Image (cartoon, rainbow, N blue to C red; front, side, top):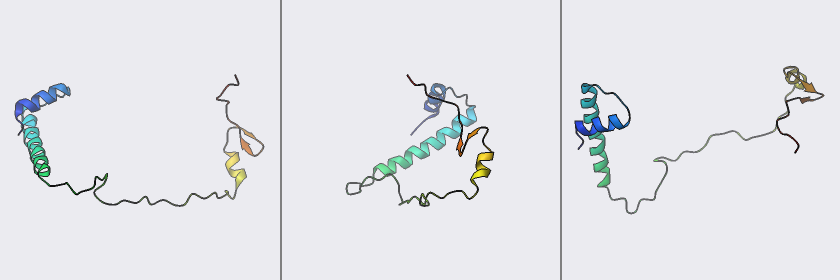
Length: 96
């Protein structure tokens, strides 16, 4: 399906320097991939709904709950600057 000249052209366009043995290897590999896609194009997909995944995947996450940290002073002691019970940070927006 694909020959060494096509692999050489694509490598040149991608600014890749391939050795002759690499060009041969990629020619064989790319031909195999294209042959597989040719087989897939022969499948009847008329009644198959489009999907984004081949298998169902669900997001496994914990519920987002507010939980106070037991030692607030320990957290505040790590701050470079604090203002009472709050972290003091540099101003990033001007009042115009």
